[in-house]
Length: 156
Image 1 (cartoon, rainbow, N blue to C red):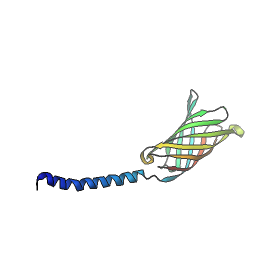
Image 2: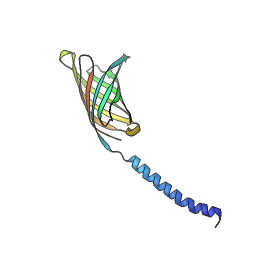
Image 3: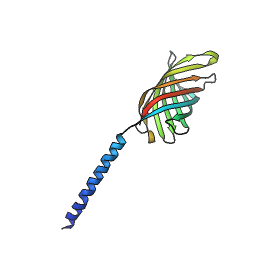
Image 4: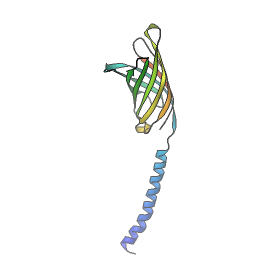
């Protein structure tokens, strides 16, 4: 048997095995699971310019490991509605999304907020994260500190 024939005989099974491995890996990568969200955020305004307030804080709870950082870029509407782009930074990856909430003034210069959030993307362990209709509730105290609860589920 020539050297070329031996090479082909050894190469074909190796390529078949490699192809099978690649197919199995892509099937696992394509499988996304639903993960519960039950997160608490405490955040405060950092800067405001050109109609956008940057709010920063910490996030704890599911599905985020330990404490993470959160950054909101908030725009306030004329009717008490706020919209924000949100980025959550954790040791296991980043999650990006948005939220829309209604702010209702309360007693003693406080407010309540209710709304929804959606997740558009993620990196690291949260790669490909998506989710919609997450429930957002919370308060804004007299010092402007936000205390927010986010519940629902996301897939990644």
